Length: 105
Image 1 (cartoon, rainbow, N blue to C red):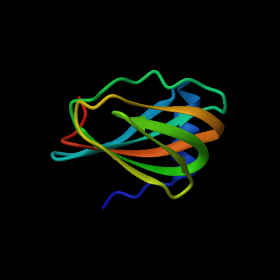
Image 2: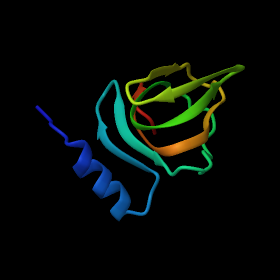
Image 3: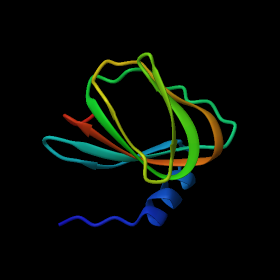
Image 4: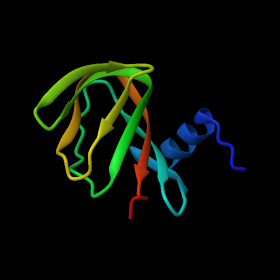
């Protein structure tokens, strides 16, 4: 069993001066914590893996392909592999749990 605390993961991510911290990599999936500040820019591009985002805190909009929606704590978003996507209009510091399948490189 592996157990993680979001507060600990967020502290580790911040200590490494990064927006993203991968904290799990297994044969069929990987997981990370992604953080963007209010007013920030999301530089990511499409990934080769399917993704699920679970918004842990914050508020923003996300565009996946041609669709845009507002997300906040508790929102879950599925992004198919190779689909352009990004968070924008980040109005509150955003913390997102990310699950990739298969695992990210």
